[in-house]
Length: 322
Ligand code: 13P
Ligand code: SF4
Image (cartoon, rainbow, N blue to C red):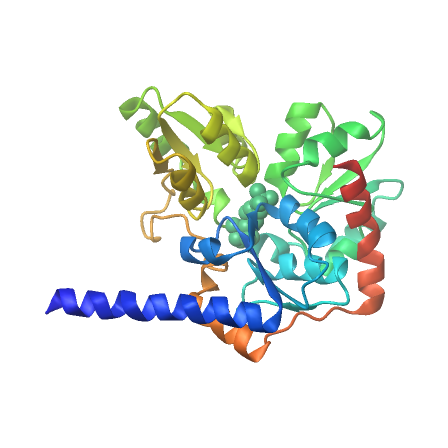
């Protein structure tokens, strides 16, 4: 009886996936997906990547598509819309925000900038369009070090909104950037004692850490990097076990590329959470919502044209310097 039930569930899922593929063709759509969304959505996407690669793809590659569906969070959809103003940009769920972007309201960031005149403003891509419009150069976790190092050593820099990424970049470049006090709720909760405990259990495991994590965790890492950099490290490494301190969606691509290696998600501090380090915003992307959004061509990302014009400059500078 149970088996029959399982079969009908997987059968309806297979139909759903077929429907998504058909609608994608019919609508002339491409699907972009971040590494943090569910594996099944990643497998249906035309392109899966980190924030930097998704922006680069949108800028360079979506030429023929009429519709772009961004399976990720809203700031990613906004970035795609800014880069591709003539395309219809859809997201499966408009409620997919980002705690890091929310930790930096544009009006408060404007006051911070005004209180510190003479600074170059560098912002992480995890920001609203309003914050991007106040920014001189945008960065992602994949290019932040390179871009900061390309600036003169004595340049005074404001860095927002992620204090953990900012601290990490300060520590590896020797800069003294002035940091906005923002953070990501997923990356801040990884537990250093629990990672050290796992290291004792698996002494040869390599520790992979996203730079949005707190500083002590980065100090025990074998690799600190963007989602794409952590994936690349896991693929190229001769180690067979990895403790992964970033959102658990990345494990799908890691296991797909390295079926013989073992990936252990780093545990969070708080045992009352799900214990799986999922980004609740990324997980709002579901197969059903992806199907509905292709079918109805909604919800659509729209941006204020004047803000988009201003936000384009720091994005362009990032793409030039990457
Ligand atoms: P990446 O730039 O590594 O893709 O990370 C994006 C993000 O939202 C991390 O939380
Ligand atoms: Fe934002 Fe954190 Fe989710 Fe990344 S993991 S999208 S930074 S809330």
